[in-house]
Length: 306
Ligand code: 3PG
Image 1: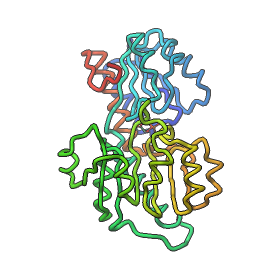
Image 2: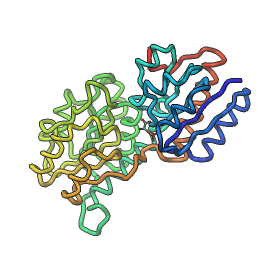
Image 3: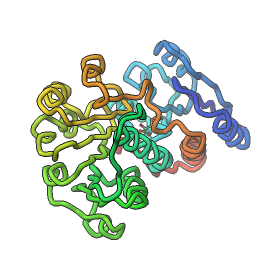
Image 4: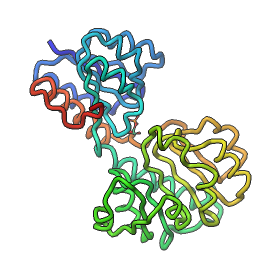
């Protein structure tokens, strides 16, 4: 019998788990749950005899992959797959997939919760500013970026984007102004929504020089990954620019040091961009269906280690 392990340090909503189990039961697969675990060794042990693995931000590192003696497929129920050791998976002939787009609305909605929070003096009662007429820069224009653009227009913001991997026409079709460089995006916009993945190229790419391009009173919203920020540059920029604001859904390593900047800095205690019942259902069920389609038919759509 095909065994599927769902390993989620941050458990899916109950409805999502119910739906996933239903899919697997329907095709005669066994579902094994490892939820809310705190010791990574629990995952190493639990993966030993399973054929398939569903994870969220859980780390499928080399140790986990090598422990999965029968493992054929890992699906990251979500967008970013920087938590999977792709080289190790490829070496072992394991297919790695993500479920693109399934939780992007949830992340985009949180972006605006964060934006309003920062614009309204952290809900502490002071006078704030409105979003209407302000310029937002979307860096980059994937599934989350596209949703950020849609919502931004509802706030009557001017929307700009930079993404070298998406055609100008695709972005313009959404009524978004395409800028020619990342520097231009930062120098144009009052708000920057970070929607880039963490790759070797993007890690630490948001640095002092780039932040320096931003206009007075600018805010950066990070719902992507903490690794894309050059934290030394971020700290230095906070100290140098008394009107700069940064809000993140993934606490930087220098979180404690940034607390001294008061209302100008905020981080959620735990990443919650995709923490909605809808996103859990969308991503969780997509992951389950992708596993069934792979095991039964060999379908490899959304494979990321090609
Ligand atoms: C993603 O890459 O899909 C998001 O960062 C969500 O991550 P999570 O499933 O761990 O909340």
